[in-house]
Amino acid sequence: MASKLASWAAEQPVLAAAAVASATSASLYLLSKVLGKTGSVLTITVPATTANLACGFDAFGAAFELRMVMQSRPAPPGSPATVFSYTGEGASQAPTGESNLIWRSALACANMFAPDKPMPKLLIKVHNPVPFGRGLGSSATAIIAGVMLANEVLGLRLTHGQLIDAALIMENHPDNIAPALYGGAVSSGVGEDGRSMVRPFGINSAIKAVVLIPAFEVETEKARQVLPLTYSREDVVFNVQRAGMLPLALSSRTLEVGLIRECMKDRLHQQYRAPLIPGLVECMQLPQTSGNPHLIATALSGAGPTILSLCTGDLHNIGGLMSDCMAKKGVKSRILVLPFASKGATAKWSM
Image (cartoon, rainbow, N blue to C red; front, top):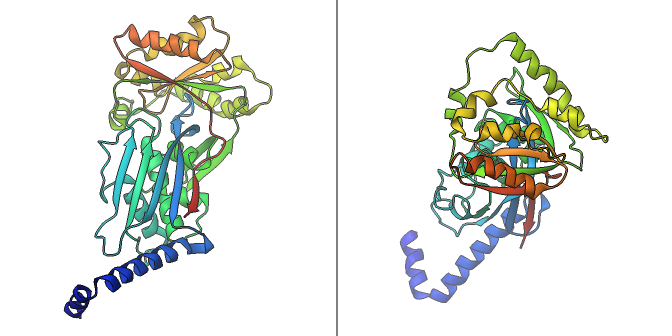
């Protein structure tokens, strides 16, 4: 049969080309009509995130308006594999084949909720402004992009909770992946049954983020290895008290700077990670030493090395103070002023 088709194609090249075009159009049409959606190009955006917010170790997180944008379309018929192309941060580091974290996350979601539905081969373009290995949720953006890709392409109609459950297969700490999906700020955890627990909370609109990104990476695994295996009751209670109060303080319409500053203290992780990040201690002392009334609190973002400051104004000057702390330690860095993202990940079909 195959030889007959090949012979016919050689004799009728115009008709053969038309047949291929028709098949491709049919593939595009079927994919874009999943759940009644129109178009053949799927665009997914996912915000960068910060995790922990000091006292909320492995529990709190928030999303920034700094978005990875991914566009996917069906690959030509007969394509053996999904192919990625990248621009932006980490463009030369990201795998361009099916070992890509986005694709592996999509397959994990599909296998969890639709094991009988194979993922089609796709052509995927990614623009990524989120630095790799810096504590801004670059892995979380990829994982959420992947589970959303499977949800959209296979028409799974998954809830946010189910999407987080699928993402937990790839990353068992929801403090980064939850805000990437939900947006805003979230408190999250994993139940004893393995399912996610997520509840959003607000951040007063007067609070802005200044983010310092050092010119080096810290591996998350290494940042976890420096943590102690046990803690004193006093230190645990210290964090529990502040973690119980912080979401209320951040979301209050009445901005209580002193309360937020006290709640943004920690005894469980930042002091142990400080030796990995020159300048961190000095940056964290700035709310007390700088005399700047607009600087509320400073904390490590995720496992670092990025450092987050919560501010009410004078953003660029505060960024300069943070950069000076790093420069005195011989560390180059860059500053981003970022609004918190009110929306989480988005998905849209187009032609």
